[in-house]
Image (cartoon, rainbow, N blue to C red; front, side, top):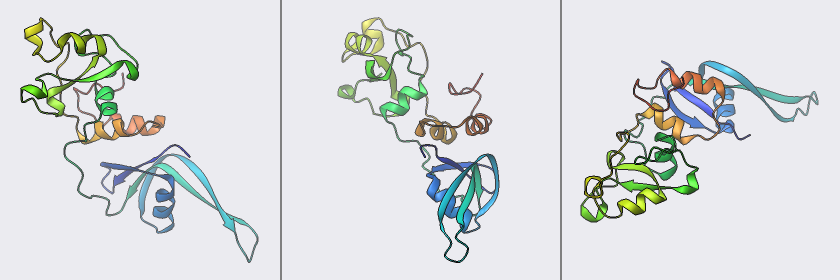
Length: 185
């Protein structure tokens, strides 16, 4: 199964994604406090006594007792997550591109002591990145069309998972900050 299960703490705060096998383990160990979303049915082995195949139903969103573990405060900066934050839109020309035509641009170039951090990086098409080269935007008469920012942990959860179910997306959308580019409608 390619879809993952969204794990919440018992208070309902999103925590992480887990593979469906971990969701089955939480269910079997009785660690699920409550749940939401569509259920996926998983089939186990056959009982020696009855000959009946076991099944476990695990919802797509589960609140796990004692799930409030320490979460990375600043999400890991990868090209995939950067392009996702910026909706695949070049920070200079404002055009949307497929991932293979995009690059990570450092607003203040690394060669000029710029850091490889969320607030110094934007998605750029290859043409704009080549034009900017090793300069500051104002040195090459380029302007940013949006402001870079550090995604919060709920945005990071959306950026980590490629196969989010509709119910999971709706749930996480309620936790996104108002300024998030990832917010639905």
